[in-house]
Length: 276
Image 1 (tube, rainbow, N blue to C red):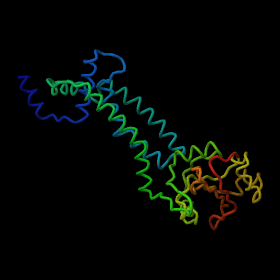
Image 2: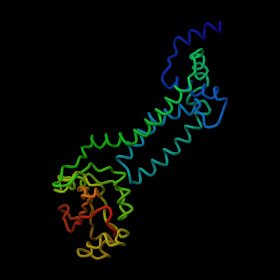
Image 3: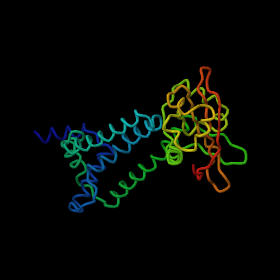
Image 4: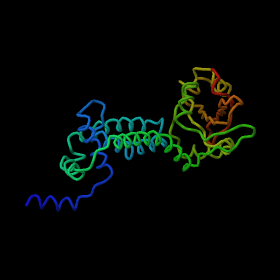
């Protein structure tokens, strides 16, 4: 009776690609007799979760919120989520033990191929790496962040993370979430229409005035006025192009925030190898 019930249940149960990957991982453990650094069923499932669920969510969120406080808390939540998934996966709550047994019985009799196992394993690993590069680029194209050609130079679509890190090391840049009104004003600026969206935008604060990079602002306001916020300045940096030596040329413009909008006060064209 039990055998008949199991056969009926087996007909109703559907099996998917991740079930096959789980079987490959478990068979690899049996084939290599539990040797360390060999894939198992849970590691194959975790790889699928990371590629098809976790990584797209994280990269999409990072594209829109990178550098903000919200993104920092989101990153902490994602790390905690990974730990929770690993815990529940090992306890059989995400992928029940009953389904594991059914999967092993379903593929029973098939010949295990170590080559096929590692082919899928390395293919998934390659897909994870490719996704890290392709998804942000696709999101930028959807956003319309495409730089227009500049005379006598080569231009590129700014890669937000890479450009931000380079600027952070050079001039102490940071990412901020802009208000819709400020974003609209920046979009109307002639530099944005020519070079595309700025690599980053910040409101200059007291801690930003330590070096020589923003010293020109002191011609328009005192340090105390910047410190107490009575004079507000917005800083935008665009990727302008390249030098003949393939060093990126950047253009930074400063605007004073007024009731009527943004008023240009200073600008600086510089390259990535410039020292401030």
